[in-house]
Length: 139
Image (cartoon, rainbow, N blue to C red; front, top):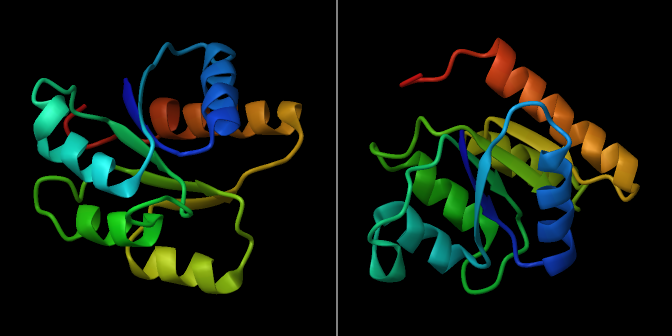
């Protein structure tokens, strides 16, 4: 499975990479560090002409250049991308962010745990649910 991680924090990128090594399914992780790059990646523009189409997106909300809420809105309003599951994976616990994301049709909202082991457990849970239980479009 191909996962697009839209995240600007180097520590969280590394943590996600390490957590994915702990899951039984092997995923290929592609990383972009801001909202504008994320949309270029999805649209196969610029440096991403030969990009691999993602099966899932992990989206942080607090991104430079175009924030995660704007990226989510564009993804879910685009016929080509709206069926890609978007997991909002952010530090926010604000109810307003949760409501905005679900109103924009996020598939899931998860507050990033601070503890490394808990973070790994979250990634394992995502893997178990989305890649073992759920039947995804096109799979």
